[in-house]
Length: 233
Image (cartoon, rainbow, N blue to C red; front, top):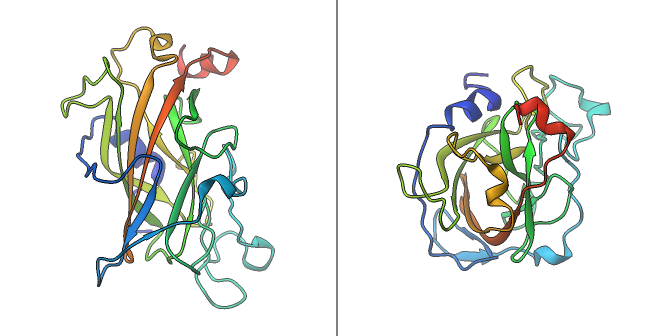
């Protein structure tokens, strides 16, 4: 693999900032064909099934009994990917779930968690398909706005572009995979101040089929539990 692992890229995003196009309506998913620019809408996310990957689960729907870790080809000879990638068939789509495997949608709740990398984050656990990745990293861009807390250099609560998302089925020692993180800024002393705050989230996934964009208007939830000790909370 010629690129940095996802965990390394996550750490670099703590100071990375980016801007995104906010032209997509909240709660929608859209994709633009790379050659025609035509937009298409994914299936209604309210009918989506729970993700096959969840927090701490680095495998997707690929049957590793026939491929095995380190083997990037399936029984059909097609590339096999994990960490939320589902299929190359159909129109490109992107859904996100919470750490509790609940489909994220407008008016939903996004909980703060102590991530496996030892950092507090609001984790977006991806499920996507309709294209075949061209490498073991898919690039995302993410922007989150929380009124009263938009204090990063770009004027957002959090922004990062790119976020490298690891899709290979080869297990690594580089840290947790399978999510796009939203990190609170370091100098926020009281994380519970975010509890109940509305947040607008804009995510773009870059593929050879075009950019796939989702927007959410959600409520943040911050409830301390025993796992916080791992993040120093």
